[in-house]
Image 1 (tube, rainbow, N blue to C red):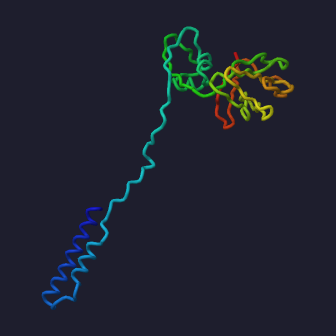
Image 2 (image 1 turned 45 degrees about the vertical axis):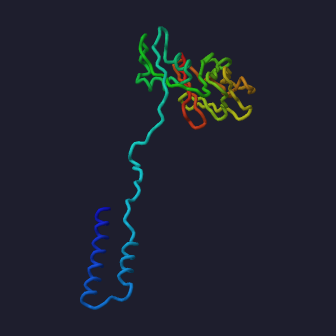
Image 3 (image 1 turned 90 degrees about the vertical axis):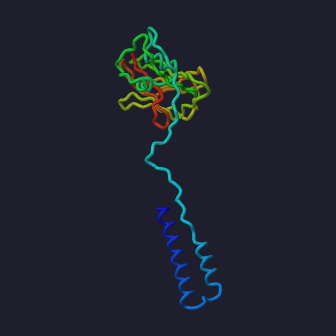
Length: 223
C-alpha cells in the first residue's frame, strides 16, 4: 500500500509539470510565479507513512514463570505431609504433578513443588471429629509474615460454612495457631466457635479453607 501511494504522488507531480510545460510552449508565458508555486505545492504534499503496528490481541502474551523446588519422595512421604511442609494445598500439589488423589507416592519419585514466600496457613488436623464437645479444626501459620483471616471460611462440601468473624480480628503470625470449635462458645484470638448444635466433621470428609475471594487456600481429608 505504501508503494502504491508513493507512486500515485510521483505520477501526479509529473502530470502537473507536463501540463504547465505544454501551456508555456503553446499558450504563451505563464503567469508570474505559477511554476514555482506549483513546485512548492507538490513538495509540500504529505508523504504517506506506514501506520504504527498495533498489538495483536490474539497473540499469546508472556506470563509469569512459577518457581518450583524439585523434591525426591522419601519413605513415609504423603501429599498431605509435603503440602503442609511447603505451605501449599494438597490439590495444588497433585495438579502440578499430574497425579490422581487416590494415587500413592512411591519412594524415589520426583515432584515439582511450587514455592510460597508469603504468609500461608494450613489445616493441621481435625480433633474429636463426631463429638460436639471436643470437635474442632486446628489451623496453623506456616509461612512468613502475618495473615488476617477475617472473611475467610471453612467448608465441608455439604453446605456447612464457617466464616471467620471481623471481631475479634484474627491475625496469625509465623508459627501461630487457632482452633475452630463446632460448638457454641465465646470467641478469643486462639479459639473460635461455630455455634452449631450437631457435629459436622467425620472420617473421610474434606475440610476446605477459602480466602474472602473464594480461592482455595488449604484442604484436609479427615482420616
